[in-house]
Length: 306
Ligand code: NAP
Image (tube, rainbow, N blue to C red; front, side, top):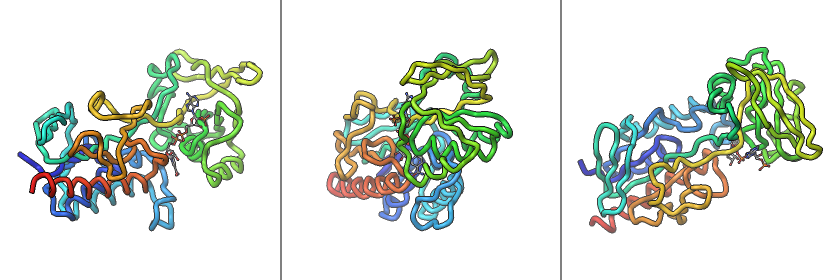
């Protein structure tokens, strides 16, 4: 069946695009492979989204956004997209269970955490290696954990982990954090957190799961073993580009390049959220992208399919 707009991905950008599309009277389908909310569904607390002057849980905010979009009649299909056919005027979305067509697509597949690429990192995933403190932090009650990274995620997660664990090492490869000042202040004030500056992880130690880390100071090359029960990795995000590789113009990191209308190099294909190359990946910029992409898609349809 031919839809006006199909949105791929039900994170903040996708849900906002859906809300705007339905308010604009568009016949719209959003396809999501897992659950609504994307990365905020695994975020402990959100305190920088305007209008919520008290911190709100990420999953709760995600549910509110989904409910808000559904209130305007957004149809959400839980299915995995296997292929996108973008070349023709009518775009095709092939999922595991069906095939859908649309006049315009808004791609909101988001991003996922980067990995360190260490031996045993993949093997011990779920056995001491985690990329989501909110999801797995509670397993480390009264234990010792390490978190790698120096951005907002690592610092926020370190403070969160300290609510559960006895001790948290924050391992950062430089001597200065990239995280925002307010988060850094909380980190420095927390007596359970020890920061290992200029330090990288060379090896994950353990037989059946994480038992420790071999870390190295990059300035003097000294090495030491840290006894930890878990390692969290928060070293940034990489875009989910599997469906668009070789089809859309991206930067070297794989983030899709779009103009200020969220239009990609293919007419009728728009992008929004963490998948897009931009200077700031936050909830508010994902929502803004979704709104702009949706309005642009509506204008495109009115002009091209009048
Ligand atoms: P990020 O800002 O890209 O920071 C990644 C950190 O990991 C940097 O400190 C980087 O070190 C380090 N790193 C990168 N590759 C590494 C490697 N191979 N080995 C060791 N360390 C490595 O990523 P993020 O913290 O996940 O944040 C992503 C986006 O989400 C940002 O725009 C951020 O502002 C946003 N965010 C916002 C909030 C909030 O507003 N509350 C919370 C979470 C995330 P260098 O500093 O040396 O490059």
